[in-house]
Image 1 (tube, rainbow, N blue to C red):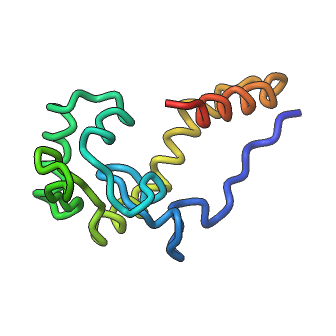
Image 2 (cartoon, rainbow, N blue to C red):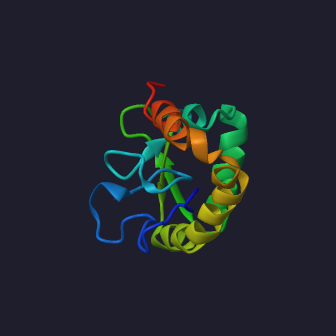
Length: 129
């Protein structure tokens, strides 16, 4: 018999600070060591072109969800970070995103292969970029 996956109540981005409060331009704050991420690194992480991710970042900035500034050592580059409002929006969207992932992926995993599927997902998640 297959049991549904149970998700801890506070499984979203960490509200207490630390690693999970550090920001990327479009993800949760656990993606960058100093709370910021270069636009070029964000493009690589999302498999989007630099042109496309720049448009996304500009759109998020216009909404007040992302901050953007010139890189200190490379004035050609831009650095992004989530604003407090951006983090609030991300945290409020997290339950719906989790439900969507569950419906699109987890609900379709065969119970007999769930352990192997979990192993494969961990390998993908932690594979070097």
